[in-house]
Structure formats: C-alpha cells, structure tokens
Length: 182
Length: 154
Image (cartoon, rainbow over all chains, first blue to last red; front, side, top):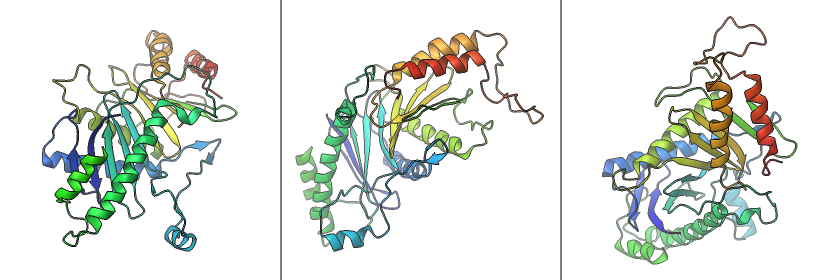
C-alpha cells in the first residue's frame, strides 16, 4: 500500500493540513482542496443519516455513547480512538482508496492510498477468515497509520504553544514526522 | 426492488436514468435522495483527484463503506446506476453488477419493446401498476434468482 496524500480536517470541515506524500494524484488549486475537504465532511455527515433497514428494522450502528469521555476516564482503559462508527469509512475507486478516521473531538484524518488488489468474491464467504479480505487488510493498515498520525498530531501540533486551535498546521517538525511514518 | 435473504440481506436498486446533476424526482423516499447526493459527491471527488491526461483509464467509483455496510456501485455509459448494498466482508462485486447490466437489464428491459423507455411516475395509477419502477416480471425474477444463486448470498 502506497500512501498518496494525508489531509486533516477540523471539526467544522475546514482543511487544516494537507500533505502529498507520494505523487499519484492530480494537483488541485488550494481552493479546490478546501472544497474537497468540505464535500467529504458533508458526505460523512449525510452518510451517518442513511441507515439500512433489514425486514423493517434499523440495523444498529454501534454509535459512541454521549458519556464516552466519562467512560474513558472512569475505566482508564485504552479504547479504539476512532469514533467514526456510522459515517463514511472508506471509498474504493479504480485508481485510489480513501479512508476516514475521526477522533472523539471531531477532527478527521483522511488518507488517500493506492487501490487494494482486486479479488472478486466468487467463492463462499467464510466468516472466520472474512475479515482478512484484501480490502479489510488494507483498512487495517490504514488504521495503523491513523493511530501513528494521531499520536504525532497530539505530540507535535497540540503541544505546540504557538498553535491556535482549528487553524492551519504550519509546523515543519510535524511535516517531517508525517514523512517518517509513511 | 429489494431481494431479502434469510441471513443478511442484499438489496438491489436499479434506478432509472439519472443524468449528472439531475435529482431522481420519481423517488419520494428521502434515503434515496441522500444516497444520490453521496454518490454524486463521491463521483466528482474520484474524477477530480486523478489527472485524466496521464492516467490510462478514467477513474470510476467502485464501492464505499458507510458504518456497517458497503455500497457497490457501477455506472453504465448511459448513466444508469446499479447499486448493491452488502455486508462489509464483501470486497468486490463489480462483475456481479456488470452481469446484472449486460445480461439481465439489456435482455429484459432494453431489448424488450414493451418496456417503457422512461419510467415516469403518474398520479392516476391503479393499485398494481408500477410505472415509476421496473415492473418487468422476467427482469425482477431473473435478477432475484441470479443474486440468490451467488455464493456470497446468505
């Protein structure tokens, strides 16, 4: 899996960080990137509203409870930092895959990678090994990158005394750390 | 049209010809409007991010994942959209969608001279008349049979 680009969106859907790590995608104007970020933010919100029904019953989507923070503090246990449970998770196209990770505070990390190898689902789905399909494999890899990204975001952006919240990230240290993990 | 199995369910929605930027007014369900909005945005993103001059093929949206399910998508040259909604364990159903279009849709709807070209919704419809959707018996039953015969169908 090759990572093409990394975007970070603030909780209002504004693009605060954009890094084309590897070539492969079209270069857009700065304005187009903002539009792109806003569109993804909107689609993510709409997607959370579209829930499928099976035999008239809504399918449960494991939404985070409102008291998530209290649970975290009370238990003191490590939990999945991805709060993106019912919104748009990933997009697969012929030439790239896109993954979305959302933190509890609503910041979105977006990763654009090379597409996963195509395996047509012709054989019987085996539930035991089902989560090891090519797409899910790549999804797990992307999540691993997200985890590291979140850590360096916390370390090099949030702990930067000169950084103001929700504003574009212009830290060369953060840039180099991002380059290191991909 | 929906086909529902015993375990997980697969639903098929062959919408009528939607041209770019035109909302499918025939469908009064809000979910399908939301889905159309999502599709439209994602499609524009997938074409925008790839340079058309350097890439050998034009980039097409294949599928996307929302929460606990995945939406498989295929668009024909005439802007007909084929959508299959499945569980997230299913990676790729492009060939199934292509089969639905090339075998079943072409055979039963396009080559059928009695099938309407445009599916218009009319207010003075009687109870069993379904003008707004494909009501072709053969199409519905053959696609139903085809989808249920798939090994991924449970």
